[in-house]
Amino acid sequence: MYSDADYVDSWKEMEVAVRDGRIRSIGLSNFNKDQINRVIGNSDIKPAVLQ
Image 1 (cartoon, rainbow, N blue to C red):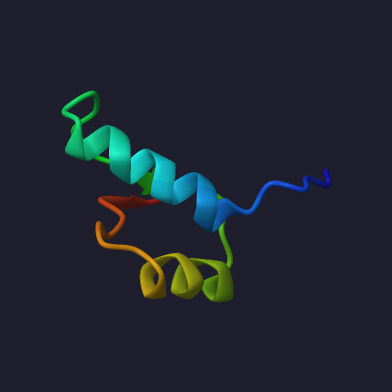
Image 2 (image 1 turned 30 degrees about the vertical axis):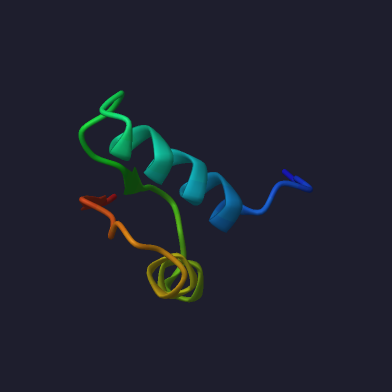
């Protein structure tokens, strides 16, 4: 499946939801090593779960 959406941008929006108290934690699923490292390198909140 192809998507124009950047998963780092999506992660940053989920970080806003954590800060606002709408959710308590965020995680990743079905990401490869390079994608995981890209998210971690560009985020303030690290993934709570890697599935």
